[in-house]
Image 1 (cartoon, rainbow, N blue to C red):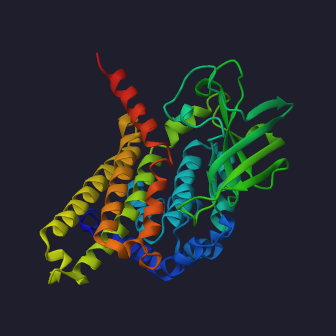
Image 2 (cartoon, rainbow, N blue to C red):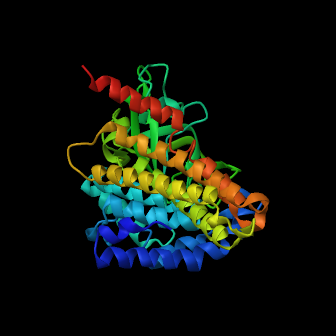
Image 3 (cartoon, helix red, strand yellow):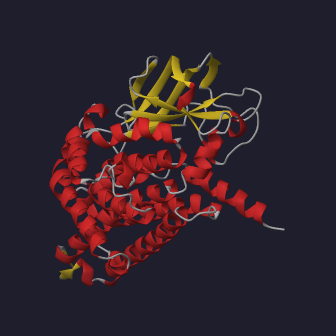
Length: 401
């Protein structure tokens, strides 16, 4: 498995952290993934035991600042951790990628009072997960590209009422949607304009009256993370739970989520890593035509190209993660293209690894079919690839003469 970059950047602390994550994955994730993945009820695929063990290992709070009890790791290190988690299971990596990035967002966007209210409790809670509700049944790519037109609005609305706001509507496809303790919710607060100019971000604890979960989505892959509907029925939220400013919720996404794309790329690259490693081991032991598969030039070339594509996608992802931590913003294309490239790389690697296994790869007990199902997720998740390409294209057009 290509890990050369972890030997070149960072010292003993980084190596110790990655070793800790690998040991966590080997001990607490890999032994249970196949069984959890095959459970027919999607809600049952989730494991609180994995979350609690990750809390004991310090993984859940890695991006939390020292003042709140965490080590406050940077985005490149977080991306490395997410990739290692995904080598064990994509869904597990998404559970923590969501929590790690939203932790960063809260620390950057919360007022001091909001930080004191929410972050210590999150740090103490071994089951403390975070989620963000943006996508709706009729609103998806409109906020990715984005479509800045009054016809593009969130159907979830928030209306002021005294010193509170009342939320009504539905979100769906939300990672950690039925498991989080705290949610960032984007709601339309100005019905005269687009979601870009008229939405507000609210902090909504799970126990808030009027908030509930609907369907837990029955996904083809990525099953160990629950994605669920969020339902708001006259859900009353205090005015001091607005994150940022009224009608400037979209700026929370653009200003405080710069590493999100890189973390999504890290998750899918972990799947590609796992597929490459399985294909490599199979090619080293499977004999056909009188010699090992790896000694056939065509197979060796496939493995070399897998390695090349993974290394290139990882380098691109690390550039984006590093840029996310730099003041003054980043090249907007880095908030879109690394995930697209990683998703395409992951799909190519996984399907080619399936071919290396021949007919055996189609059998469930080999494990390749799960990787194929998982790899398909990020062709669409965290922004459909086509939408992200259009987003990057818009940025390129606007930067020219």
